[in-house]
Amino acid sequence: MAPPLRHWKEDVMEHGRNIGALASDAMDHYMFSLAKMEDIRRDGPMIFTDGKGLEVKDVAGKTYLDMMSMQTRATSLGFANEEIARAIYDQLCKLHYAGCMSFVADSAIRLSVEIAKRTPKGMTHCVYGGSGSEANELAFKIAKQYHRHVGRKPHAHKIIARWDAYHGATMGAQAATDSLGTRHGNEPGVPGYSHIPAPIGYRNPFGMEQRKYYDFCIDYLEQQILHEGPDYVAGFIGEPVMQTFGAQVPPDDYWPRVREICDKYNVLLIADEVICGFGRTGKWFAMEHWGVVPDVITFAKAVTSGYFPLGGAIVKKEIAEAIPQFLHVQTYQGHPGGCAAALKTIEILERDKLIEKGRVNGEYFLKKMKRLENLAVVGETRGLGMWTAIDFTSDKRTRKVLAPAHVGKIAKRMRELGVLGGHTVYGIEFAPGLIATQPQLDRCVDVAEQAIKEVSKEEGLG
Image 1 (cartoon, rainbow, N blue to C red):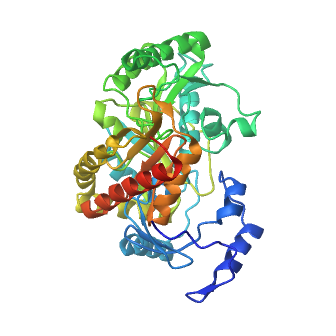
Image 2 (cartoon, rainbow, N blue to C red):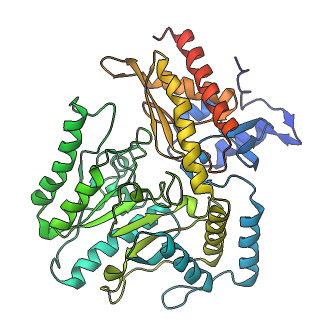
């Protein structure tokens, strides 16, 4: 068993830093997001200082293998990539800001061209923001303004999203969100949003036979459009692979059938690829797995590998050209530094064949993870590309959830053993950088197995 992490209140010096003082400063002056303060007060904040490749060091000098791309799944090229850092530096020294509206940096134009080369056919135009939340806000505005100008559905303004989805933290994106409690905790919010069942595998909310449940989810979309009024529904948004509960991969017919329904009622299909895009699932964009072309693709995170805040939306040519004046503006949209980071990221992804490497290693990773299903508390392992998850259960026959406290203890034990994973409600998720090696993937599975076995023994599970 690994030694427990040192308590954050200890006033000790390591590597020239007073760890206790720094942690106390964090508690006194830093406002944490989503994390439960009672947990942070008990265990202390995770304060990181250095990183290289997929390894990151905390303030005490302990090294971790980051198998979750720093929780947000953003750092696809790992830490301390000097090529990207240099590209940002060179751009900022040359032109650090170019305004917005009719002003645009040359790097933003070049990035738009490079992205258009890699998107499904017909998706030609890009508009930028600073995050995935802003990217989805862009998509909603595009959908509403498109219908207003085309004229067939001038009053279309409603957006349909899915249960348990996460689309961001700004007010419109949060209205489309149905997980983590962020929407409910900040209501009243933006009107005009509704939610339908999502294609959750392994443990669906109705206990239905899985194939029937998937069909139910697809049929529900059409019924919801009819319920809201087809003339008033502007768009449907969904993550190709859902993050909630960990890497939820839909059946192969889900997205093609959703595309048909959206076409039938002239509803724009918005693919939220903020996590999936730029190689996470083994393709440039996840919708390629099912041969479906959305009307709008949103992106962020891996487009710069987290080196600079940047998000955006990719739009079909006929939709972009139908809007005579896009009523939206942001101070930092198309920021030259962010676009330079994205250009270099795309260059590295292509030059080093990292998307193909991620596909191959993702298959290897999931195959290795399958052995965990032999453990009493592991119900399922699943994934697509370099995005996998473990779903825990206290009863394999009924698929009853394992107590969140036990899941949290397993995740904490992995951290004590030097591997960072993502703690979902019912399981643990992994989304390592595309630069991960097979020995690093092996270590992750070995540590997960060790942590599960140790906690199971301590808690009398299985």
